[in-house]
Length: 481
Image (tube, rainbow, N blue to C red; front, side):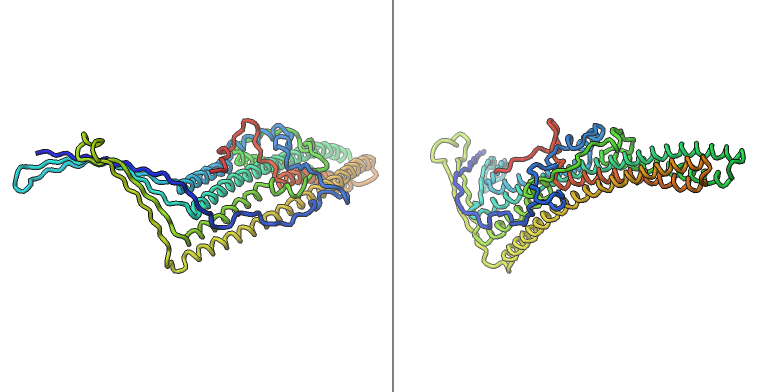
């Protein structure tokens, strides 16, 4: 005896999702902004510029072609940028998970079972049961819990995208600053080699004079000291140059190797006056401020998620389809079947868990709000420090140029006086040493001026733009549901 039973169930429902959204809507905290950046200009009463140096694209801000190539390579290969891009992908996946909570869940199942056994001592009975089912369940987002969760996740994604841009800004300016440091070391090496060659010529002349009795051996020894001092600086500089190249290589995501050079340090173009722009634009320009604000949006939304737990959880389930003992009669006769159900669960006693979750979310929001306001103030300080640093470093460089010219004239006059027998070699030794030191100090002053310019660019939030056709990490996601 054989029997066959087949079961087929199909579930369906359509329902709207009305309801309110608990929790506070986001409002940007009030921050006190200055009318102009301190240190932006020495002219009293001068109106601040609307344009900002931070709005310059990095490939326009830095005119050295070799530096541009290094920055481009760093943006493509740097581990920091790739790590930041991976974090954006993580946040994007978290947003997808949060969005899924707003949708119904659908589950399908199928099973086949075959049974054989005696029935009341009679003939053997065999049966086959085949079952397929499709069920749906939906927890209504009546109080906006899942919508607030999605809002929080979306803000977290935007925060990671701005964090990625902050990484790009830091990388661009770090490469530029390191490159200028390398070119300054190259200049110091050039000065040392040129000075060494000049001092060797002077030593040969002094030795010749001593051989003919025109001067004493003390002058020869003093001339040797100048030669040895210049020669000793060369291997030190060569080692520092190689180490700087290694540092730049790591910024580029490469193993240590030599670095291509472009313009010399003294030939790097830069404006004398740097427009800072309006302080109000800094809130929209700096990636770290935009990141801090999105973190505040995310924390604010979590307050709504926590408050929603005070209210009942309303769920709907539905199923419908056909049921028959035989496949041939599945769609004939009274085989239709359906079910529909609704449930509500209201917390009664949680030992203060929900209340403390709300208190935690509110305290967290307050903390992040204060962090945002602090970030804004620190940004204004960064810009002011960078502006005054650039202006004063330029003034220092101008004075150092005058000192170097004066030291050069003094060295030339001392050499002429010594050759004419009007002074001892000790005066030559002192003047030459001062001139050598002044040249090195001038190179360092020129470096500080350029690095101050880089700090202004970074403080104003520049450097995170992409070139046409360039892709840094994942593309920007949509902000809507």
